Image 1 (cartoon, rainbow, N blue to C red):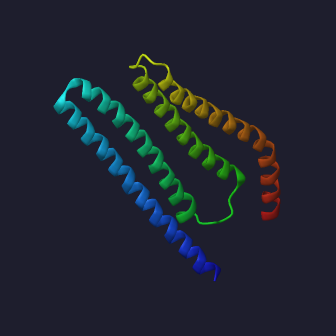
Image 2 (cartoon, rainbow, N blue to C red):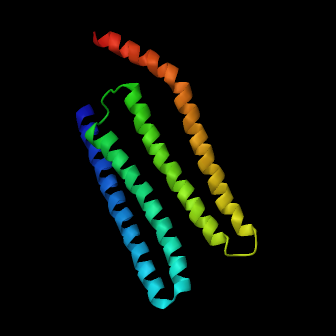
Image 3 (cartoon, rainbow, N blue to C red):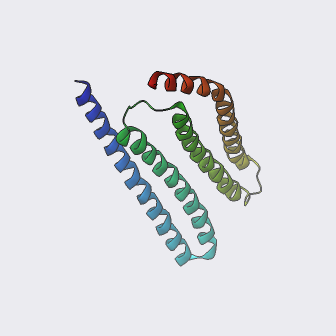
Length: 162
């Protein structure tokens, strides 16, 4: 029963990952079409289309990375036991990608909002920047706090193997 559930889980994660990858590629295509349409109408529209396309590509990369993470962690490796350092590195890479995507989206939104004279539109990009900073600080705290625990767990794991 456990092997069939594991196989079903791998199939589900694999299918979801393929769908996410396809959607991220479609999002890049949508951004490219928007740029082409913007350039063909006017340069003012082109700048807005370029900023939108950057946002789409950044979101697409984050979605693609999530899909890749699922494939690597759930489909290929499954639920096998690993060293805690591997899990920490994998989580660090994943969270770093998400924080970079949030930072870039915040910067794109700042450029869009800076065109307006009203300061109200600056609240959203400011919140995004603060969120990205909180993610990075949280990741740093996680790494700092987990380092000692990781050493203890790996020492136990190695002792069990020998």
